[in-house]
Length: 340
Ligand code: ADP
Ligand code: MG
Image (cartoon, rainbow, N blue to C red):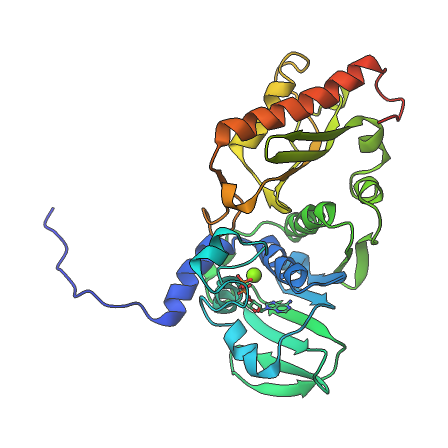
């Protein structure tokens, strides 16, 4: 076939650039929840409330009691590549916050109706910014931020068609909060759907949080993981082989506090179970990997769900060893007696 007639090279309009970025970052309401809760935690929140309508499709509101955003910076929060979290390459390479790309709010605002409501400790009252109109008006709330995201994908109907039922989207939203909640027992979380409280996890000890989020059974059927291998520290809990499930729905891995889905880590865990788990049975676990930030690159994927380790073999072995040691301890004691 003849080549298509050539068109001149042009820069894309801002809005379209953001919509393209949104394609990577915002897949469904749960992605909005993930990004907004990330921001709340980065702001130092101790209480995060997520309010959903229609599984988050009609509305996601995340409220926090964090540091807030000054009124004059509210428009900046919505701009692409605008962030308060890093300012230089060395800071990128040792980033300690969940966010740093300055993309999420801009991306979300390009595919939904967004409003920011925020108040800093110094402000006499809160301010509300409507993203579409740019209108800034006085508002009422205590210190912290509320981000309102309505009618996700209203302007990108093709993407809206990919959404599942409200019940499914709600389940994904709750799972997104659960992932944060497991890693942050020092923060209270609540999830509301259609005006009803559907999940609540109050601030407490790490042990209490695991129990609240995953249930007594998970605790009874798992063993403490606590190992230091070189620069890598691994803590958490690994399920006894008997607790393995048909589905991989209780596998939580964190790197420096960030939930990740990492093949290398999953494989490391799996290899610790290789002699005790057969077929496609899926182990249960919650593992927190702590590693000096310069040894891990989190800037691999826009959603930061993937990471790259500088010394991946070492990390793999560390995970395997840590889980192995926990399981060995469980072989010495009969499973299910509740001891750690
Ligand atoms: P990033 O988190 O990568 O910086 P975002 O687009 O998610 O990018 O947010 C942009 C900026 O808006 C943040 O850097 C932060 O300064 C501000 N911000 C967003 N959400 C909140 C919040 N809940 N509390 C305080 N500041 C916030
Ligand atoms: Mg962010």
